[in-house]
Image 1 (cartoon, rainbow, N blue to C red):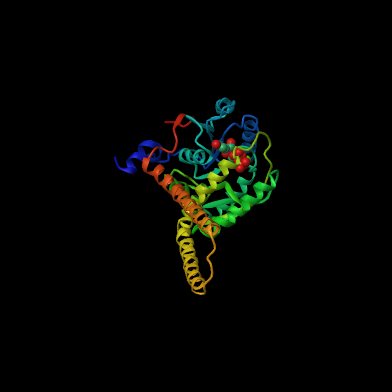
Image 2: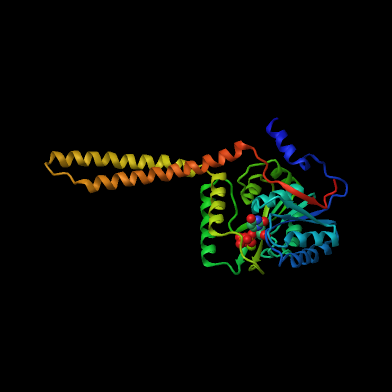
Length: 330
Ligand code: UDP
Ligand code: MG
């Protein structure tokens, strides 16, 4: 089986053509333990999108929630068939949940939004307006962020500036995964089945006409963040490794630097010796050895980060396993 065939098999919907009852808009939201917020989320999305008077669907992806989220999603679907539910077999993570949602979404424009109401659903209407003007990707730019710790704000700001510097894709600063994509962008994204997904980078990488809409990012209305430091670090590594070789190339530069330093050291030692000086003792040797050992381990670790990701790609596992897909007419 070729790679393409295996992808098609894992994602049979990719092969389907869009039918005549295609909704104009799809609202895709990943859900992980958001039982408290879901009804309010649904209400606000409908209140914002319904007045536009065009057919839409809400695709909720249950990313292995351990609370009553799934039950609430099913109740919403019972009441309103425009709500469709993808139930993962376990927790696959935020980025994968977004991927599955966009895979299943059928709208001519697909909005991705967090289900914790930090991204105001009303902003989607502004995004739609820009889409109507001909932009194919409209991303949300956070002008303000409420209720985030100073640490999160500082690390996020540092990260976005760093990633803009070292990658070739121009990922706009202060954007998240809140965005509206034209069908063309979604189809392009669907063709990219890499495992360590940094969606906000991928959607810029595909190109097309892009613009931003600024909005105020609210505080989480209830519940806790599902991005502890550990996950944030992994997310940052995914973003950097997916779009830059710089960490690998750094070894070359540091190597040349240290080698040059070593050469100078050798010359200095020879001169000192010729002048009849006693040479410095053990401590210098120890420091030099430890320093070089440290540098080498760091670069081994960086190699490991890339190697592990290559291994994950080679295994060709599906990105996610869907236990149930509810509301998608087969
Ligand atoms: N989320 C998810 N799977 C996860 C973690 C988070 O689907 O493993 C969802 C979560 O329900 C929310 C969105 O992704 O709708 C963003 O997560 P969160 O609000 O915890 O991140 P933060 O806004 O704090 O960065
Ligand atoms: Mg959040």
